[in-house]
Length: 258
Image (tube, rainbow, N blue to C red):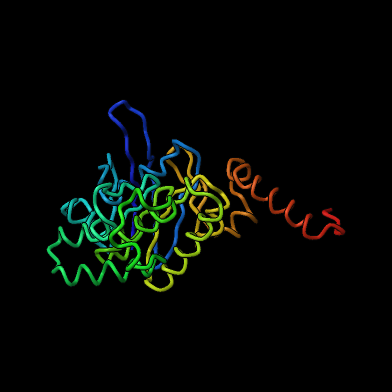
């Protein structure tokens, strides 16, 4: 589905953001890019839909090199959700969700049906929310609208950049569960960026741990926990492991942890 082959990005300043990164993402898979700020996660995401152009390497989607495709048309076929949400503040929820289908020339009746379908999919009653403005929504509701907008043009690929980072824990958990349910229903292929280790382990089929623009380790959450490949990966997982141990000890106070 998505193939990154020896992809690099060097900024004009000489800083290397992505360094010969190779990654294969299968159709219907959730892959999480995990790492600290500045490790190349967001740049990698932007390379896929050509918001950033690579300095070297190739990126293919369904076997087609993205360099040979019109970047605007490419972005309209790929859903993109980011933490800032970026809803048009003076447009209604319906106009926000229907923005890309409108640009693609869909008929009004088709757009209206698609908007209602997607609002229901993300847990927002169309009758109650389609005419509201973004400022009338909570942060979680805005994020749901952002996801609906990303899927509006019937995208099968969803790129997500720290989509839940600004939300409270309960809302974040609810939206994570919605995302997993949508993935199952729609067969979505998702590449998600986060620095939250727990989020990565709970959502991903596979996790790619990045540092300095390179993949330190790629594997399932269980594989990473069982056999961290480097000291950096082990340190990254240690906090989640410690939290899990503490929660287990609280739930089972009489058990020995030795």
